[in-house]
Length: 288
Ligand code: NAP
Image (cartoon, rainbow, N blue to C red; front, side, top):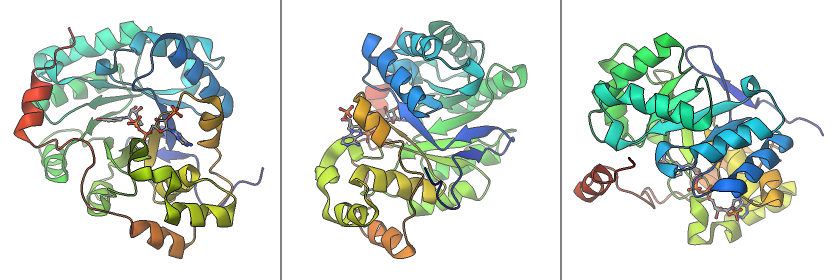
């Protein structure tokens, strides 16, 4: 297959670590379904897997990593610190638990999952995990851009990655630009908006896709990586896992990028992370 144009399949984090631009998200996948999806994805070419302590599937992810047929060093494994463990005192123990659950010696990326709890204390513990070699990169998820800038300004290590909701209906262009300034790698979750707003039959995406012989899903993923945004998407379906990786042999034009830009509604579709309801709900959600 012809490799397209100027997008390489990895991005270099500000500490020199290479991170794949695209990965498999495994939220809501359990047991053998999760193992099968990881094996299928790795066979297709994926090298990045994104889980979280709260997904309750780190054990299955570990099995998938052991059974997928490539060396652990070839994979880029992310998990996330849950709110209950977001403090200096608890973060290291939580990291150790995640490592044990997965049967791994180290993580490639450890993220603070929510902007809740004592995230400054947790961050200092994560800086130490980095020094100790338990994790190769650290980052945050769901921090609004103001909180990300604040965290970056007042700590030793600037986050390597910021994972937030990004899809055509919520593009976060200004926030992405702010992230890139101090060298934080933007990463988008729910690139397909979990199928909301009939995204897989969206007319704009369909007509762009038609010109390139690609599906709306592939157009979305290409739009992300062409803007230097890494992206994790979930699928347990073998054909869709493969479809979602076949994005390297075409390029969207500036006009097509602009058309997709016009789909932005400027509002998140899932959680308002700064709301009192979220603080209470996630703050009371215990995983151990
Ligand atoms: P998503 O990737 O936007 O959408 C997943 C849905 O799209 C599934 O129902 C999947 O069904 C379907 N799908 C996948 N590929 C498709 C294709 N080519 N054509 C048609 N349908 C397709 O949503 P997500 O799972 O919420 O997000 C992805 C990952 O982001 C998660 O797994 C998780 O790792 C991460 N995430 C992080 C946070 C956070 O707070 N940091 C929050 C949410 C998600 P099938 O499986 O049947 O294909």
